[in-house]
Image (tube, rainbow, N blue to C red; front, side, top):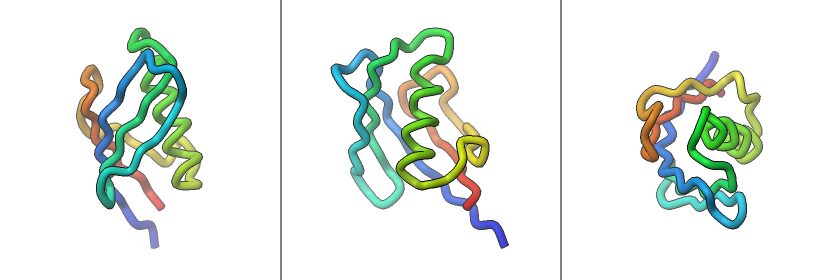
Length: 77
């Protein structure tokens, strides 16, 4: 049986390094080196989340915040 998990993320593009900071149980700040253009920062966010949760990138869906720094992802675990 697959479980769904909602993950709230605040993204800080153009940071000095890639970093994930846990704020609450399912709430994170992600700092990424990439600029917020042409989906580069969002792609890096997916890579970092996939590595952190040990879930494949294609198991994440963007629920809210496509063009915003505040995003909500759904992960199938």
